[in-house]
Image (cartoon, rainbow, N blue to C red; front, side, top):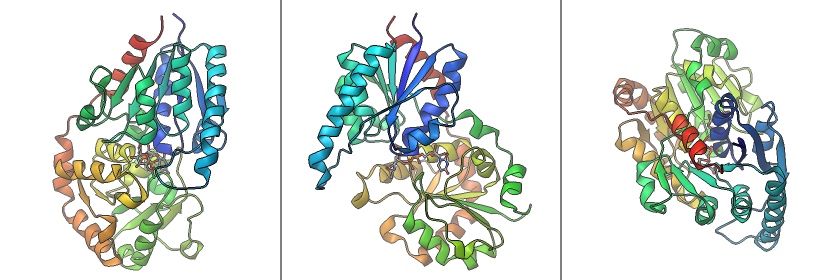
Length: 357
Ligand SMILES: CC(=O)N[C@H]1[C@@H](OP(=O)(O)OP(=O)(O)OC[C@H]2O[C@@H](n3ccc(=O)[nH]c3=O)[C@H](O)[C@@H]2O)O[C@H](CO)[C@@H](O)[C@@H]1O
C-alpha cells in the first residue's frame, strides 16, 4: 500500500495543532507526509519546526460572510489555489488527504476529490466552520469533536471521534514551567491565553487588574503577536509571551487556573490536564459564535465558568477570576469524571481504513 498522506489546515493554530499531533504517530506507522498550506499563514511557521514534512504552499483567499473589497479578488485566489493543489496532488499521488479546516483547506479538498483521492475532514467546533461547510460535500469522512455536531453533517460521512490532544502536553513539568517564568513555588499561577492569536479585550481587562491580582497570583500571559506591553516587562510575578512553542506543556502544568478564549483545541487541552477555566468566548459580532457554543457546553458539564464578552468589565473579570479560584476543587472533580476519548488512535485507524489501496 502507498502510505503517503497530505495534511492541510491553517489560518490559526487551532487549524494546525491537530495535524501536528498526528505527524509523529503517522511517522511511527510508516507514512510519508506532506503539508499543503498558505504562503504566509501560521501553519507555515509551525510546520517549519517539524522535520521531514515537505511544505507545499498554495494561493489562498479568505471566504467571508461580510462585505469587503477583497471579496472580489479572493475567489480568483481560491481558484488559483485549487489549480495548484490539483497539480500537486496529481504529482505527489497521496493515498489520502487529511484536513483540519481553515480557508486553505477548501481548494485542497476539492482538488483531492477531482483527483479521486479520499479525504477526511476534522471539525473542532460544535457548528462547522464556513471552510469545512464548503468542503464537506467533497469529503469522504467528517470527524467531529462534539457529539452535538453529528446532526450538522451528512449521516453517512459523520463520525464522532472527540478532541485530539498533543501527547507532549500531557508530559509537562510544573517545575520547568516555574523556572522558565522565574516564578516561585507556593504562590498560585493564573495562565491567561487569548487564543492562538491573542485577545486585545482580555489583555486590556487583565492588565487593568494586574496590581490587585498579583497580590494573590503569579500570572503567565500569552498575549498574541505584537501584544507584549513593555510597561510591565519588569513586573515581578508577571510574565508575557507572544506565543509559546515547546515550553507550553510546562506552562500548562504549573497553572492552577486558566483564563482563556473558548477555542476548541485549547479548552480540550485544559480539560485533559484538569485545569479549572474561566472562558470568555469570542463574541457573535466577531465570529459565527462557535466559541459561545463550546463554552456553554463546557459550563453545562461543570468544567468551566463563562463570562460573556458583553459582560466583560475590569470588575467582572477580577471577581470571576477569584470566584473560579475559590471553586476550583468542584471543577477539578467534574473534569475527573469526564470520559476522554482516544481520538488520536481513532483517527489513525480511520486514515488507514479510508486511504486508497
Ligand atoms: C479567532 C478564531 O478564529 N478562533 C478559532 C480558532 O481558534 P484558535 O486558533 O485560538 O484555536 P484553539 O484555541 O482551538 O487552538 C489553539 C491551539 O494553539 C495552541 N497554542 C496556543 C497559544 C500558544 O502560545 N501556543 C500554542 O501552542 C494551543 O495549545 C491550541 O492547541 O480555531 C478554533 C478551532 O477551530 C475555534 O474554536 C476558534 O473559534
